[in-house]
Image (cartoon, rainbow, N blue to C red; front, side, top):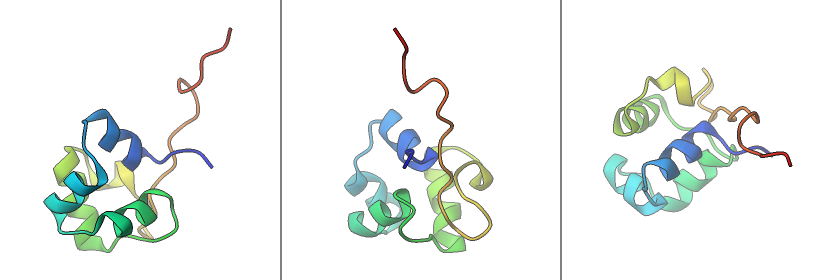
Length: 79
């Protein structure tokens, strides 16, 4: 499974699960489930997560609340 945009953006900003979870009042374990597409985020949590990361909600989540997978291009270098 590819990483999600949510996870990549969180990591790129130097935030741990605990850090971002604290900002949006979400347990790190619950946030991890959302990042791994094993759980969905409610509409209010999607809005808070997007706001905390400085992007539009649609960049991170589909309409059902699942985190969107990141495109594979650019994440692997070829020799």
